[in-house]
Figure 1 (cartoon, rainbow, N blue to C red):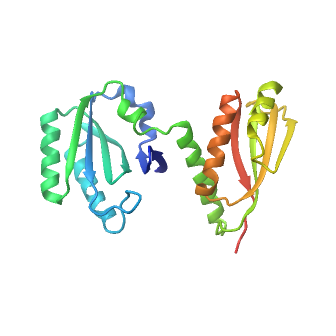
Figure 2 (figure 1 turned 90 degrees about the vertical axis):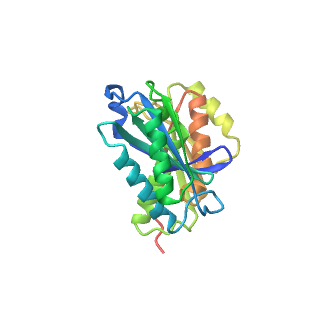
Figure 3 (figure 1 turned 45 degrees about the vertical axis):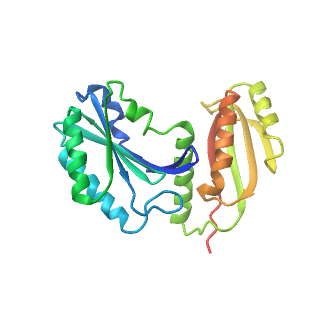
Length: 242
């Protein structure tokens, strides 16, 4: 599960990462998407409190109604006051409509559905699979969580270092020029054993290491490095225990 932005709205996406290598071998030609309108979303349009349990019950029932012989649950998206459940399936539209109607009556939720042919698996690759920026959010959360496991409260500003790699010096120079004065220091050197490119730029700044504080910086670096033909390799910092 990872957070992202969909337009102006916060979103959380959960998807089956392991199934990506099996998609071409699945016989299910259709995508079924169920949209559940949340009863009491918070100000971000996301569920809170007891609603998590209610939504989990609806999800379990959907998986029960679309068993593996006729479909597979590939992920869900929660955003803007709704939760969307995605399935690849061999069921026709009439069967999907009946499932949506039955679950709505049982759970007192408003449930809409979309049923369409999807031999290209676009509902997986376009709606669920992480973009480059989504992957950066995931990496930032992993670093944040690793710090928390070490007893870090994430509330103390501290030095943070970022690494970028380029295959030629000109690309690195263009990258550095685009940074402007965003960072406190920029060290340039060669890293001969890097398969990402030997021309390295290490950037330093002072900040908080939670992903919300870091993500605008890391996405900027990720996008700018790619624009210049390089590769952003993430960040690290020290642990600050209370």
